[in-house]
Image (cartoon, rainbow over all chains, first blue to last red):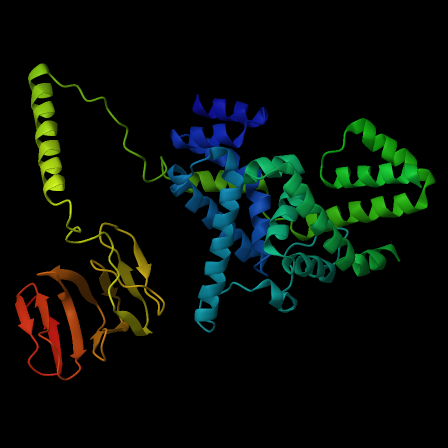
Length: 199
Length: 241
């Protein structure tokens, strides 16, 4: 019965708030719907910090599990996405810190995005070559953190500026101003890639 | 040119994910005949596609959701306690009311009587002790809080603080004068008051004290008794044996 209800919720694009409340009532499948909604966004956020795709997915999983275990601490369920992003960024920081502490030890695999050239991209969708993917990841990774998050929420999660504002508890005008600054940086920094692809 | 300004705004709206369908078709129609707007629009669309491709995940969202759900416990942790209404019988109500009145009376009597005097132990009093060398991870907990924070050189020290050194960790506390206390690994030291003065209580573990000479009476209490410093350098060790 619960599963049927959750499926229905997913189909009707239920808000985060209702899914969080359902998860708090013990409906794990409601949390599964949340994971589906934000999986690509959280992996992408991790990829702004971590060079390795598999490690980024591990961090995303850890972030969701941590978010689930601390769900009661979330004061405003409508801001779940912003809260989850903070958890994911913290997990990335922890992972990088662990790697720095035990560089030679077995199991320390987080590669900061700056060292991306050393690692081959696991993901290679049609359209961009491996080196071009690295170039885009590095470009986004070098932007100020607040811009990175907005660009990922906008282009990867496909949220509009107004939806992002709701999820972060900010004014839409503020988000649009930040987004436009971010677009300007990206336009400038991705220009060589655009020329390369065009030619 | 003035007309293009409108389409530049539409391109920004497109990038913000806020363009209406009719506006998008109007924009697309315009870009067919305007090379500069077309170039701008294509660059914007390329930027979006490039970011989307570069940050895509190997695992599909559906698969990730399904595999994570299997790993979730039945309910999130730390579920807050549900509050049940408290039902009191008449006799109990009277007893509770009397209790409240009694406590209020006591408090008021105490407060009025002691109005001029400062409280004996103000909440979180900073003491003239600073943190010196730290090795490894030493945690500090403030009185009345069950949160442990890592101690660092800038940490302020308060009355009631508890210092807990983990394995292979030590820290040095510098007292107001030149005296120092070095807490060894796996030790717990509490700052408390005794007869209105800051005192140290070593609950377990070991510490080295190096006191300035001459020094006022200096004590360290332990679960087994109180130690008075007669010299300037000594070690206190508390074990379960």
